[in-house]
Amino acid sequence: MAKIKFQKVPNYTLITSVLLVIMAVINSVTDALGINGNMISYSKYALALICSVFGFIVIGRNSDKKGNKLVFQQEFGVLCLMMIYILLSTFAKALIHDRFEFEMLLDILRMAIPIIYSFALLNTLEYDQIEKCMRVMLFIYFIGYLKQQGFSSFTPANLLSISFADSYSPFESHQFASISLLMFCFFSYYRKSKLCFFISTVFVFLTFKRAQVVFIIILLVLLLFFNLNKFISRWWVIAMVALTVGGAIAYFYILTYDPLTNYFETTFNMDFNKFTMYRNVLLNQLVDSNYESFGFTSSTIFLGHSIEMDLIKIYLEIGFLGLALTVFAYWNLTKGHLFCMIIMTQFMFNLITSHSFDGGITWTFRMLIIGCVIYKHPEPTGQFRLNIKTRYRLTPNIKKDELNAESVNNNSVL
Image (cartoon, rainbow, N blue to C red; front, top):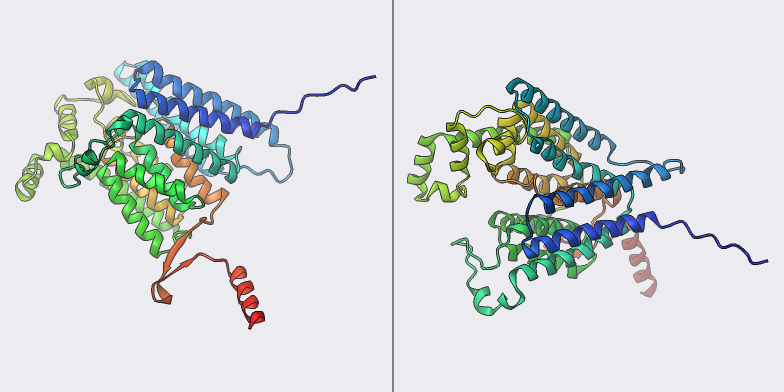
């Protein structure tokens, strides 16, 4: 009698990895081809939500295994409290003003899905699987970027026309700027693959966002001279929360106070509108229209377009407490880890002066990178940094045990 062969249980972590890569392919293709519209945008979030549900199913199946502990729980809880506060505040303001738009609920969901998805990924995949996915996705996004620009456009003449002083580059890309920076953040810490590190660095320079280019240069210098793999006092996290909240409110008043605008233009001989990418014009248009918040995203609905400054937007729509809770929830992700705090500084600066909460999967990557550094693989890989104590000699980050073993071998030879 023939034996009955049972089909093997599918590898759920492999399916999770494949779904993550598929999402990257969809994002890369739609960005490269310039396919926009609400249907495309919301379909990406729908796919992320499906992937999140699948991830929670995997977490549930693994919950009965011994030694299987969930990570990212406290951070996830604080982020959920933030989202609940935003949701309740929106409902309350909508009731007061007797106005509610379905778009408000959709935008809250768009902000919440990356939080849910990153929690699912961090509790489903191990570091090796995340690292392999990041390698594949780097090439997917980089090829998508090259397709967007046109492969034939990368000529010596166009490369020489790049001007940092004039803020001009024929290769600038808003769609791929955030993802290029996130890939760099990952592969600058985990430098096991020198090729991925090189491509991610070039990627940021090509997308040509000045603030990002300056940031990666600063980060490279810090990685070269200092050990960023350490935790510092949590009081620094509280201090950065206060600084970010204060910075967002101060920037709001700077943009809406005409004497400061005139002083800036007179002192620096620069057009303040161009300096802020005309975001001050959008903000003043909102303020001058006697806008009253009726919930999250209400300023966008009121104007017909976003003011493109996320933290100022939350301040106007949800209030000071909503702003403070949002800033704390995201700074709380870092746990005082120095590398994570440095990259979070850039994220927060971008939230004050620009917008990224509508970036979809990019916030999943932000939380995935930070969670990976803190919980999955704290030790950087392939790191080389200058050891100042040894007269600036370039030395690899060799473990102490390996160094002792090498010393014993050398003595035996002598």
